[in-house]
Length: 484
Image (cartoon, rainbow, N blue to C red; front, side, top):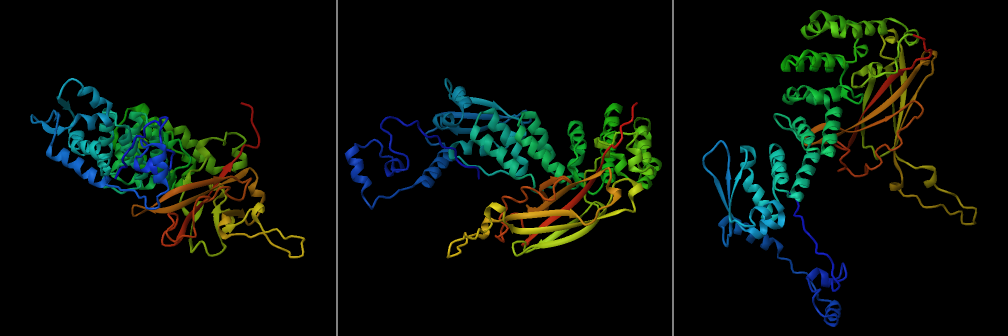
């Protein structure tokens, strides 16, 4: 239920003091002496019949009692109009558009497409009662009605509903459609929320019905991101191939899409199979031939040698957030508020097949109540030897990731570390946060800074467990610049 928006009058010279009983009971018109007597009455109380008032307003709309205006809602698909007997004052209070339409006439004909016309009764009820219930598929048409008739409170409420229901499960999917709608209306905040959700939960979208509805612009935006969370680059290529086969875009668009795939992140054996079996790749082979050749060179040569002749400081050689075991490890911490924990895992040194047999061991420490130096106990020199009291809630979660080894093979390689935090939303486990930090730091600065792990009902816990996925992204650096 979306909240009723209230409008407070501008305080006048005789307004009651904010927070006083006079303001609460509407006694600001009483003389000063009389208000003073009432303020000292210990039996004062608030009498609230707002629910009864809302019920009577609903009855006004339902029965049309005292109606002074009529709205006739027509659609192009039907010759019949839906009629609403309304009250000009109530409509004008909420909508400046209705105030203008009903200024010199009592009967107004409105033309609406079918998707908004079917919700018009809900929309009008909101104008009377300040609340409305909506479903996922009704969000866009309800937002369209609120925008068209300039009902700003409802417009903001629906936009907030969309931001908080991105994770809701629906048969056809809805986030892609909401993103396109946010672009159309220029809602940058909703647009960014949808884009981030799609990036962090891309695998869930790739296999859904809404993948085929992704626009060219959205697809290219996703492909240029390095924070995409998916099993592997091959999974992304397969999904892109499916999108191209279904949408059949013009040649230049298909080439732009295929050139955004990071082929060096795909193993040579898989690249050979794509060349032999992919009809999409065969059709556009000339457009990506140079990238495929470069990928085979990348896998065949020593990274140090390859970096002498090619610029490896570009997105083509930067891994995304891959969930495959060679890139990291899942870590489920049961009862995370109880005590410190540690684990270790191995990753491949780098994405190049030249480093396929080389492994790096990582140690991870999790502390639920680590205290910064400024909050640690300080012992006094006094006789009592008093210690500053320290509360459990003063601590904060801490995650430290360090390599358990050093090797000459690390030359020219730095490691970006990413920690994904999974939560259960609307019955599904999805990524809520992604923390990234580089080799120069061993820990996340603000890791779960606002999470209350002490509560079993914390939104960050799934069955009283913290679900993490730690990803190590090796990044090669050019050590020698070659003049071209």
